[in-house]
Image 1 (cartoon, helix red, strand yellow):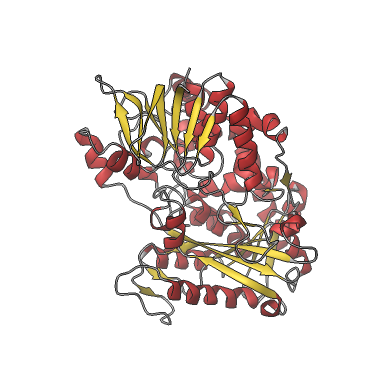
Image 2 (cartoon, one colour):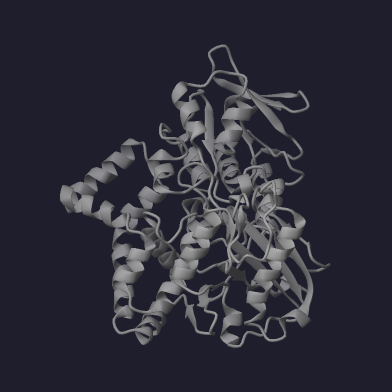
Length: 525
């Protein structure tokens, strides 16, 4: 079969691109080096039979709020995709038992925040109203093609509307760190604690530039769309995409490791070469959903790189690692406050300062003494994930060092080579479990099995998770927006004609929104 486009990788961006190009009548081939598609979307019975776990990504709020889903929702639903929701998408639980729950209900949230501290509810309402008013422009920046006439017109329109100084003020305010936004606007430490952990899910910390704006965006999205999971496991999303791609004449091959990009005499991409030596032609182009290092140092290793690309690549850096812990339980967790059992994603943390401290420790190569724990409760939304009466928990630790220099608690000896090993993984998981068990009655008696994944384990599952970084690279301002992945990047083009770069390492960055796949598929004719 002759293919118009060959797509390297099969994460959410690759699948979105393949589906949309197929709908345009293009013949697409998706190549995946692993034995299954999905990238960070992976569902398995990893603890005990009948317990269905999303090993890595599980929450799809960014997807259902995305232009990609708007374009594909009907097609995917027709192929079996369904989402499960909770009216309580998130919450926070402090060590002393104080808690705050956030609902998909603006009036309820305003009243709850007002009860925490006078005017906090009113300020929250004002912030969300302001963000809603700015949403068309803001979301065009966050998810649109930055280097385009359309974006230039968009910015010019805003400059005319706000005035040049007003537009400059908008961008200046957008750079505010989360700590500054929370402490200057809100009096309640519980409000601070509720939102501080969410900056970690953006690959940032509470003191990072623009983390305040991203926290507002997350609050806005959670209130509007919740924190949905896929009924039956995220694998059902992959199955729906696979069926859609094949129904449109596309093909997917697993265990197909791409070793190089092939170029024609003019230097343009003409196809790919597999590790087994097979060559596959692509008449119109190649799309790679990989990290910059994979693209430029492996797939393009046989040709010269422009000096500006080589220099930028040498400075490309990755962020904190991630860790996952999964539990199979005999019964639903018995939180001391039963309403917590209805929350989709619950953070356990001492608060804003606790998040800041743990993030700083991880960035310095230390195992955090009290890590921020994100507790997902899939069976509260979708009971089919476990046998009747049983439950699963999905834990994510977004503050894990990629290389271990020490332990902030002084209890776990650092490995001489700085690498994660099974002993350190399990001892750190024990620390996390102790924090979790503090809040759940008889927790350990309900545990059937536990499965933990260190940053090194996650990288072994997905080569793009360098050092366990799930965000495709550090997400600070100097390596984001116009400068992602490299300072000289122009949208998703590379220096090789007909070779396009997508994935978490590219604009609009990480997450399950499928944004880069959508933008490239839109741009290609």
